[in-house]
Length: 135
Image 1 (spheres, rainbow, N blue to C red):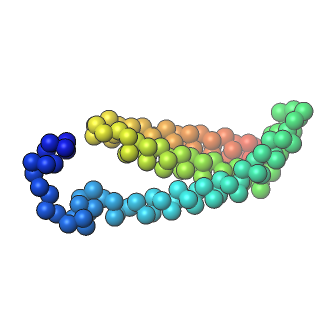
Image 2 (cartoon, rainbow, N blue to C red):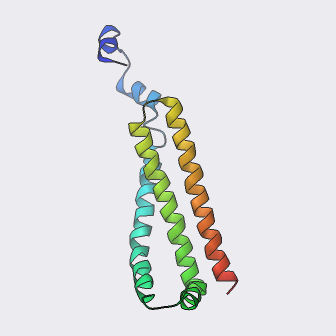
Image 3 (cartoon, one colour):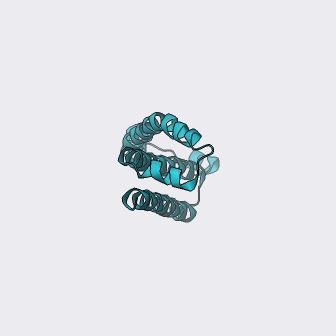
C-alpha cells in the first residue's frame, strides 16, 4: 500500500488485528529460537571442525578418511552439517521474506531455498555416512 492509498483509506484496526493479519505473532518466535539454537550448536562445533581440519595439514586422503570414519567424528560432522544447513535455510528465509516484495518471486525463492538446503544437507549426510560406514 502506498502513502497515497494509506492516507485515503483510514485503517481502524487495532495493532493486534494488524499483527494477526501479517502473521507476526504466529511462528516468528519459534523461528527466532531455532535460529539461535542452531547458532549455538554451530558455535560449539566450529572449534572442533577447525581443529580437525588443521590436523589434516600434510595428511593424505587415507588419513582424512580414517579420521572421519571414527564414529564420534562422523556424528559430530553430521550434527555440524544438519545445523549448518538448517541455520542457513532459516537465515536465507528471513532475507527473502524481508526484501522480496513480489509474492510470486518470494514463494519461488522460498521453495528454492528449501530445496537447495535440503539437497545440500542430504548429499552431505550421505557422504558422511558413506565414509563412516564403508571404512
